[in-house]
Image 1: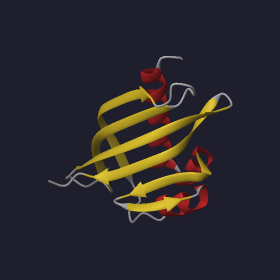
Image 2: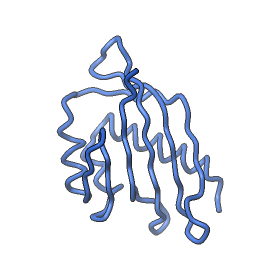
Image 3: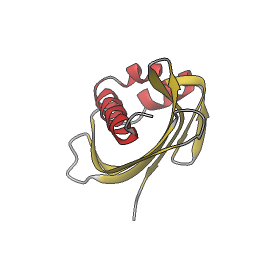
Image 4: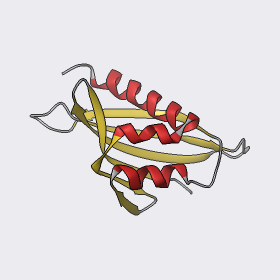
Length: 124
């Protein structure tokens, strides 16, 4: 298996850059059996996930990553579990919001798709 941390970093950089630029382009990263849990609400299917992401109540967002961890998630498939922590800056707000996000990435051809995605804001 290739260096999983490098793959995870590359994926996370691409995901958050795309999220900040054109969220509708994230559709290619999900499949009909993919699942997103957004703040405790489960959403299944690429189109439903995309609908949630493009209709979030903010225009501009920046993800500032503070930690990233990756592990293989199967002994037989080159899948990855990626955990991200960081801060969100929404619509140029002065107050960043801590967040955590976990992705399970499944190989698909020469790339990966998001099978599971769990997102939480970390208020405290």
